[in-house]
Image (cartoon, rainbow over all chains, first blue to last red; front, side, top):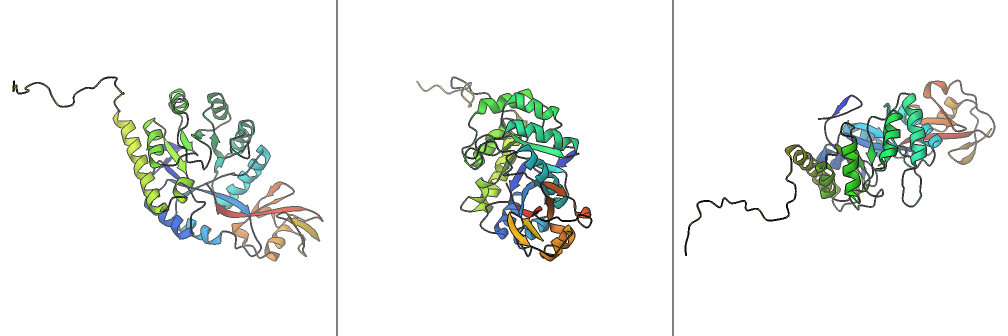
Length: 257
Length: 65
């Protein structure tokens, strides 16, 4: 079982709640995949309290733990204030910390990220930082108080899957005891399975499910891939071999010549 | 008085933040508030006096990834 910040999670799949064709399809996708966490955000409310109200009713009915994010924040200050508001609104001190450094690539601003992680940890937040596979940055995030790291494997929403498997392996090897969650860039269930096979503890994804022709089917497919990848990791996979090795026993072969 | 609410100029009669939330017909429980870039917690809205030109942010739950 996966434990983060002292809480044991029911699954290794974290699911985003954005971009679904309807709140009902989001709800069905969540029921089909049983994620441990749903990510949510907060935005300006329109007069009359109608902003996203259908969505919020559906999410509350699901009863799944929430992980609010600071998506769209481009400075530590914005992210810190957003996190404070999210803590009150969603009633949780867990926060997916995003400090975006580049408009087009949505790379994290790792300087602002470390600064915000330090400030929020000091305020009692349990910070889930959206970061890169840079091990130096990762060390600073851990020093700042983070007990989990969430590296991307490709740009947000790109569906490219693991772009640098060696960097992911190095990070896993360097931090054997830190929960590592691949956040961003996954496009297919096989991508999720690949990173679980590498020993990553969980995946966080949104667009790959919400943007599929059938989000409910795709949510289920990702849940199965995550489970299979973890089971494979725990079961010990063979290393690739250069030459063929027969699987059928060769002794006792008949001679027909 | 005139305020900037969620980026838009607005003329309101409320003089305190809790009254503003009611005047705008928001559900107190499902919004988070900030004034001039600083969060104002729910239990402090009643004591928070508004000033001409204050920048108010009123945020609510939204879909997120």
